[in-house]
Structure formats: C-alpha cells, structure tokens
Length: 113
Length: 111
Image 1: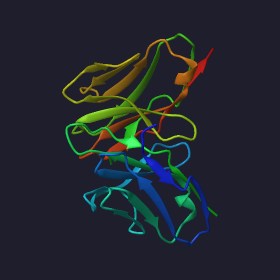
Image 2: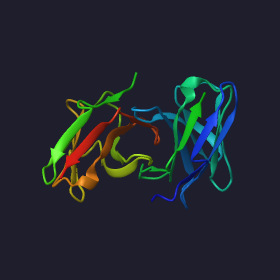
Image 3: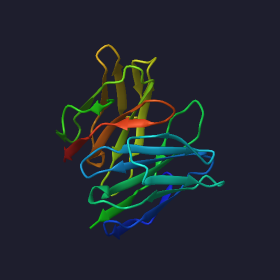
C-alpha cells in the first residue's frame, strides 16, 4: 500500500450533475496529480497541484477543476457530468525533488448514467 | 501529439518463464521512464524507473532497458510468477512529473 487514500471508492451520478472526489497524499508529499483512466486504457493526466496551485494541465476542459489544501490533500471537481466522464479517477502524490516517483491511490470509480 | 504505445495487448507465459513487455514512446525529450503494474481494482504500483542517461537498470527480478535511438523501452521479468499477472504500463515523464501512459499490456501467468 502506498499511503495515498481516495474517497469515495465508487460513485454513481446522473448526466449534468457535479461531483467532488477527494485524495489524501502520502505523508511528506507536497505534489498531487490527478489522472482519468477509462476502461481498458492507460491513465490520462488531468492536472497537477503543487503548493496549492495548479501546476500543469492535460487536455481536459475547464469543467474539470481542483484544489489542494495546506495539508497537501486535494479535491477533483467535475461539473456538468457527461457519460464519457465514466472512468476510474486516480490520484498520485509525490515530492518535488530528484525523484519523479509518484505513488497512486486505489482510485474512485465514477459511473455517469 | 505525445503518445506512449505498447506492441502487445496480452502476453501469456508459463510460470517460471521470463517475460518481456515492450513499449514505444514518441517524445525524444522525455527524461524519465517508469513501469507500473496495475492489478484489478487497484491503482498503478511503481515497479522500476530509468532516466534517459541510462540504458539499463535492474531491480529485484525486473530489468528495464532503454533504447533512445529507436525510442523503445522494455520490461523484463525473470522467473515469472502467478502473482505477476496484471496489466503493465510504461509511462514517460514529459515535464515535472506529468506522466504520459501507454494503453497497457496484460500479462497472464499460467501455473
């Protein structure tokens, strides 16, 4: 186990609704990255937070937003949910430094109906 | 755009065999590559990494080879065990820990 936790484990939402996913990073890690993993695909980078600010973003629309808190935990918010948003959402924590190693949480399975 | 791809979607081996999983990447500026293992219902688990200034790195039962000339990465697993059955992803660092993942290779180990 990596020490990265995510909540909830599973979630079912209706198209058009909003959702908030949460991540607690591993102790000592100050950077959190979020990834979307569609079924049968590799994770896709959504964005990264460092020192409570967004530090890079992948090819995702603005309705995907996030926050990082002083304790380095993080939230992923998705507005106006679409069916294609159904996926496993992964959070990864890391420490800025010579090592790029990221530690992934177990993910939140989001289903949009 | 940037992409990391895998040649084989599924690899079936017998217990005790050596496994080789291959990966091609497209961004020649990537400086760091990682192999992850993902079991069903779990997040990706770090296996081994390699920096672009290296050609080979060994871990416990695993070896990663990097060929920058042809932009190819491979993961070798020695004496494959049933517990190695999972989906394996290669990923490249495109800048400050922003990873680009491939689509994955499923490794099936038969006893």
